[in-house]
Length: 65
Image: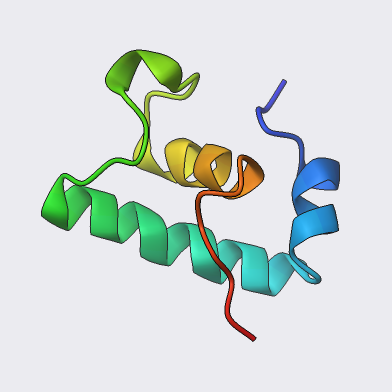
């Protein structure tokens, strides 16, 4: 099972396309800058794309309209 679930994330972001765009930009930023908003042990996912989705679910990523 994927964490966080797509249903929870779609309550935060209004479309799947925007969700993919936000998560991909954040994960690329993690890879380039090695900047994480949580400590290493606080993430459930090992890969950056999953970690970006976790940050989005926890409200650590601000979405500008």
